[in-house]
Image 1 (cartoon, chains in turn green, purple):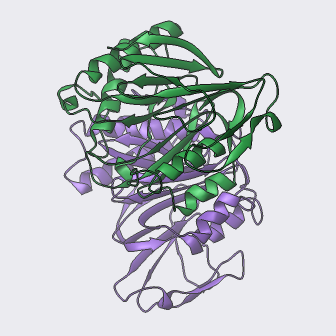
Image 2: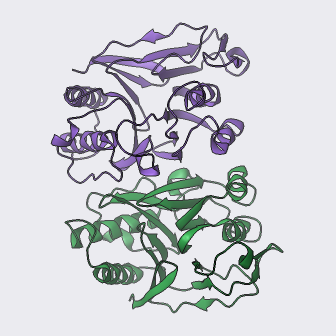
Image 3: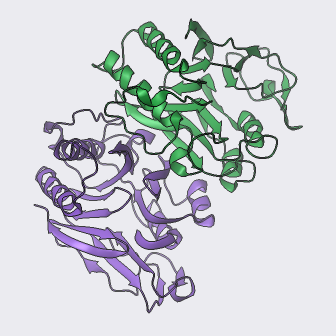
Length: 255
Length: 255
């Protein structure tokens, strides 16, 4: 989720959490990263979200944020463990970078990772280390002044790693949400006039017109649409979206 | 807290949380880091622990761990914000390092930090970056095989930074808990025969004999003793303790 006003992620997280072991097979861990400026807080558990007291707490005690990344894991590589639980966080350029991956990138270990060492043993965290290393090498002086240069580089690196497997990812830098589609990805932007929406996996319904102001823009990105009565935009494999201020800023080729 | 068997930190955290805004002035943020192997989960809030629903949740849903670091903040440098909330986490040598500081190190910014950039603006996080940079420089190949070499280096670096201000700290690497005393620090090791203990700041009492086995060893380190009816060992300024497996492994000069 990426927004122009602080928004809580309760509705979308509720839908995602259901896929974490109840309505979906992604029962091997869950995580939620919530930015406040350049820094992020995470909630992580190496177990199913669907029956997690902590996931329930997060839903019952909403925290507003401009940028959040959530993940439910179905393990392909790497055992069920805290260190293998997405999203992953690392510091780069004095800000927290957050990464969640869907897919398997079998050939990833041939790429250099420089100073970034994985803590766990997933291909996902390794791929994140590759991204960070190559980003730091491309912009050694710090967070690039040219947003466009950053977007283009991330899309290029996504494409390079995407050749080694399935590389759907969400990447946050505290300002942008980057979403690459390898196989499946969709987004929706909610803005005025707001309407009601119902979760795809539950009967939970929210009337967004009651909880928003007319200038709010909230982008939600997910592997599969989280609601059943809204129109989501489907991603094209090999493309990357850039969201900022609750708007799709750019769609870049990422092959 | 550092133990030889997975232990929950509820009792000690309850005492510490009271000092976070109710029985103490440390109301500018709180954090709790819980290791599982090389990886750590954190709970962080830039507000008082004493009346935080999340801090209550952590007490009511105990998570067992071999190594935990908790902190309540009274700000001296840096505004009240997530990025300034202890404990801080960074990856080094493929493991999460965790750091919490008590005091102010005014002269810290003259030291190099290499690749580690602070996300916030506290002297504490900057000092952590200095520690990590100099540790990486001392052991560039990875986590040192010689434990003693690591202990000695951390004590030496603690002493070096301690010349620039007040540098009481707790540092975790997933295996050890390092605790440096600049002005005030105390520890207790609970082991058989276990007895009851009562918090210093509350009437909460736990009979540890009911929740332990005879081989358990649990070291608890705090700025000030957390209980009123146990004997805590007081630290000597300029010394650093090393805990592992619930035992004090070494006391090193750190001047």
